[in-house]
Length: 80
View 1 (spheres, rainbow, N blue to C red):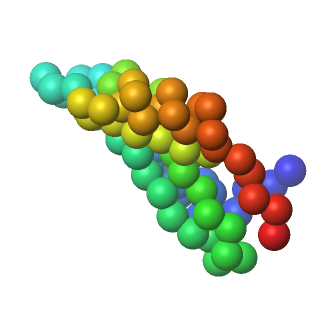
View 2 (view 1 turned 60 degrees about the vertical axis):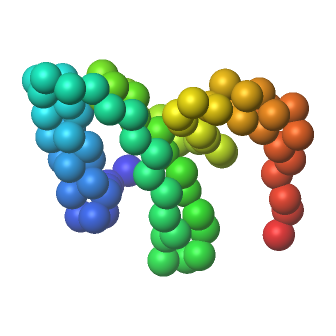
């Protein structure tokens, strides 16, 4: 299946970001969300070693464990 140019650019951006994260002297986690042209929303999580994963919900920081356990229990997908 051929990729669109935008997908190819995003993939390359992710590869470069992951490479920079592995070489940098600091560690970060990243939640990245947005809306596609068709109106569908996406949320991605990138951890400190550069693993990128699409997710339904996310949290980070001091209350992340509590927040994620609450979302695990009560999150429901809404049908449109």
